[in-house]
Amino acid sequence: MSKIKVGHASNPENHIKINDSSVSRVHLEVSKIDNDTLRIVDLGSLNGTKIDDIEILESTLKRNQTIKIGHQIYPGDEFFNRVNKFFLDKRVLWVEEFAALEAEFKKYEKKKAKVNQSLQNKMNIVRGVLAIGIALIFFMFGERMGIPTDLRFITSIGGGILAGGIVPYLISKDNASDQYVALKREYSKILVCPRCRKDLSGGTYKFWKDEKKCNSCDAIWVS
Image 1: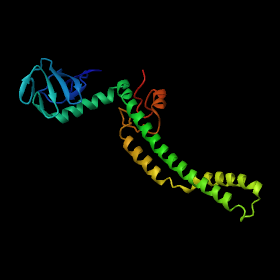
Image 2 (image 1 turned 120 degrees about the vertical axis):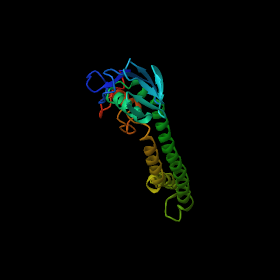
Image 3 (image 1 turned 90 degrees about the vertical axis):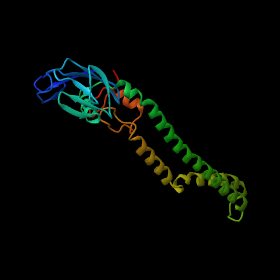
Image 4 (image 1 turned 135 degrees about the vertical axis):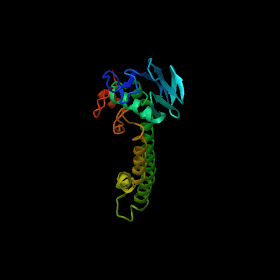
């Protein structure tokens, strides 16, 4: 629904009802231009509609303005909140808003991959240095260690591989974990259901697209 009607509480057809005798049965019509602008059309009301104390038949309303409906005066922000609440409560399709999240999902996945790659690079460097060092020790001091000459090369390689294998257990992942937590915290406020603001950062864009709708508020993302 792109337009809503505002009028007296006695009229069940009004979407926003005002219980004041100065407000006509069908007083005005509201539609959204953007998040900070509403289009107001007076529908021939008896006591008129004013924006910033100027009577209008059709005009726009900004958040920093006031609107007078009959004798009732509303700050712009308050009226915006009532209008937005109606749109949020009644609106079902959120295809465009969800599609706009795709770019943010890609940024999130790219940043997570970067953190993981950084950890892997660090592990590879330490693994290589340790493996070479252990291999050289076995090769150079194998005789003193009682390793037969014909087994020294194999033992050196094996020792190096074994040493390299324990690197993941030696390197602390705390720094990477901290970075993951910081990323999750940042994107849990960005990757949200456009209707109920449920955190979607636990899944990929493809996962949520395949779900087709929010499992908390039933907002439909894929028509």
